[in-house]
Length: 640
Image 1 (cartoon, rainbow, N blue to C red):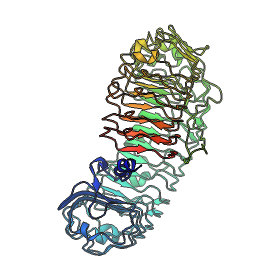
Image 2: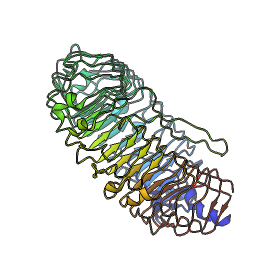
Image 3: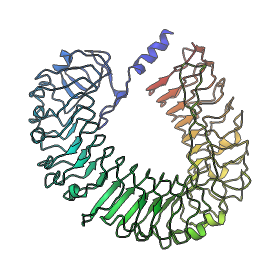
């Protein structure tokens, strides 16, 4: 097994790396000379980017301090202190010291980096106050991340020492309970401020007064605010995104604020808003995207949105049981996308969307609706491009005790009542429809030649998840030859006719059939027509064997998912580099494979290969030959 370890060693050293800007490409990094557990992008006098992640370091290695480094990440190293002048000769522009035990910093700790460092990440340490004196001389600092520390308050003394060059400041996940008056004065270049995941109850009305002339994104999610802080944000003329999700807000309009705001994104998800009264949004002149998802909204009164313009309105997971006919009046000329998924709607008033001739997308997934597009969507029949009426996927966790690893297996459960079957003539009236999700395709559970007759000619994405399909007959997609994405997951397909996919063979690129096949043997003929397929997902089925030539015609195949089946062996030639030269991802995990023969996986472009949780007892020396691009190989749970 020594040759196996030689192959796996460089792969095991590839540790996940994630920074604010995702700086490093681990495939181009190698073990550092000063510590082989660290990764470097170069060698010699300039180490380039360096990552030391999850490695015990009592101090920063001296060899590292004496070498030029462009980006340095030190995470999970048990560092408790950093002496002054440690980084004088590095010249790095991105520095991260996260998941350590730092409680303070010397004032001159970053000496030598005054004109070079742009990004500084000190997240997940133990600072109780902002060590602003340490940052005061950093003349080019754009990003400062102090998230997930123990900072309890913001003081003027701390804030005035922060560089005015800051464009992004994160104080998320601390212990702040208020935002004082004038605390952000003189942050003239600040674009994004993240104060989420604190315990903020109050924001002073003058907190941002004239001090943040360029602030675009204000994130206040996961705090304890009981109302939208209109008085505080009214002075932020450049504000585009306001995130107030997961607070305790019960009502939207302000009693004493008479002005109006224009925002690109307003996020009020998971608050305590119980109803939307008439002109609830009168304090907002224009909103591009508005989300109220996760509020328990019992009533939407007529003209609730009168006085504002909203392009995308999200009302999913709101427990809405009924909607008044005039609920969306006032949005006729602006509304383009409406999300009412995951509610308790049983009927939509026929005039609800009357005159909404700009509506492009409507999502009614996971309701119990009897909808007639001929009535409810008649005024939008030429504008709607995306209609979703299907069922969501529920995930059931299954534990396989035979192997060494727990595994989450996907199961599709169609619990509760369905939306009623919608006749093809009614779908056909939406002439410009490009995407369609359906809960049921016919009363009989079969895909047939005439099923999609009169459907829109340009339909590209068809989602039939959990539609109780049992049979796919020949030429089923004759009337929708432009389909490029087809999802048949969560069905009970017992037979696939030889020419089932013939008419979409030159258009289909993505085919998903997860937990859909009640077949032990995958038929060859239906898949021979799919010559342009790029992604094929056959996972979580009962497939015991694969025909040798089933994938031969798929020259463009990039991703193949066969996990969670009952495959016992792979015949020589089933997976072939000449047939599938562009294959990048292959997942065969959680099968019953007992042996990997020679030359089975000779794919030059393969990057990810998952063989974990099989019953592999033997590996041939040539099993993994010529895989020059491989960066991830998982053999966990094998019995070798």
